[in-house]
Length: 236
Image 1 (cartoon, rainbow, N blue to C red):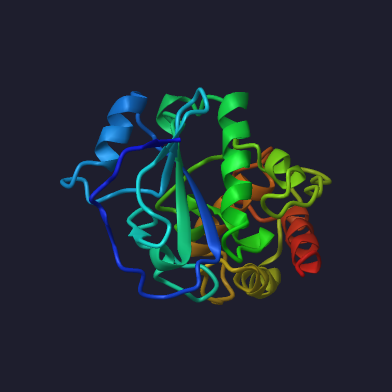
Image 2: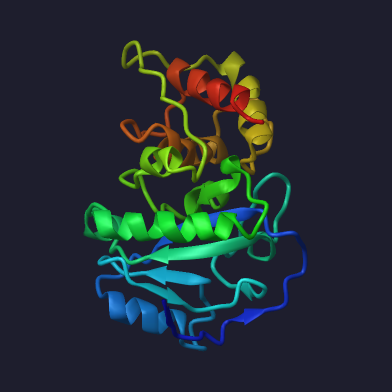
């Protein structure tokens, strides 16, 4: 493993570390993305960086608070940086059409992830996407990220998503409260308003990117609710 220290970190304010947070860089040049994470002007960093060919670079010691999550919420917590280990994956992201993550990169992530999980009490359902903790603001690592493959390797939480019965099977307004309560129970930062408002659309989109990647349209339907219920039932 290469070490390229970033100056962008500080003291952890809360603990213990119990979130593993995954990102893509969203930049076309992997070397420039790495340089940006090590540039004090950027005020961003992560604990690890993985090139497309699987090379792993350590940037910030795990005991330090890297600056990768930004404004974020999960399970009622708002200082996600203090509670998490952040991994950046070199990938140009949605602006470039969200190219697939190469096998070598994912295998390196699995090896690193297992190593991290051996050191920190991170449960499967707290292996998260940046978009999970910052719905609407962030989209990474996106709907082409292979969450089922990671879960099969013991990293992350996954159930087979329910299939939609038909395109018009959207939820009724009376289902909004139940959907919002269940999303909040799983960990998403959402207020229970009883309306299919903008925050709900953002959170549903984030949920779909992670758990229903074949359908990312912000429209909650029966399949969305059923998949969410299966995830909740599968929690320890």
